[in-house]
Image 1: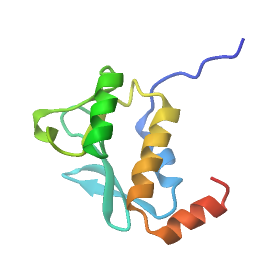
Image 2: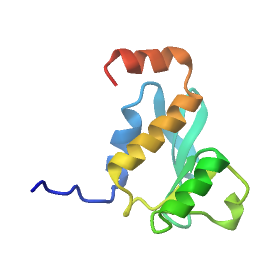
Image 3: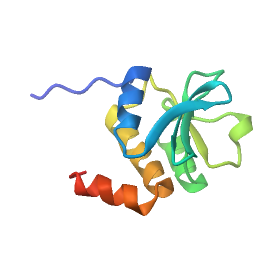
Image 4: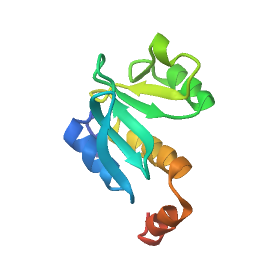
Length: 121
């Protein structure tokens, strides 16, 4: 029997995950920690919920909200916008890594994506 990986991610774990992608830099957005690639916002910590605000498209947002509302949620502020809130203490780190990669690929320049792929990702 294999051990099941514990769900949840600390901010330190999130930072390590985010900064592993080429060109990602840590900064702030609305006074909270944020991650960008070439000045394009990817994600930030939500100041009221402590969740991660991850930019996405509206279709994927709806799928995630329906799939696991204990992990994925929204607030009225984000209704109608391509941003999903993710409870870091409940998310499977592998799922978050894939979601973050999707957002990064949508916003990163082709040169950085090629660099990432050349490194064996």
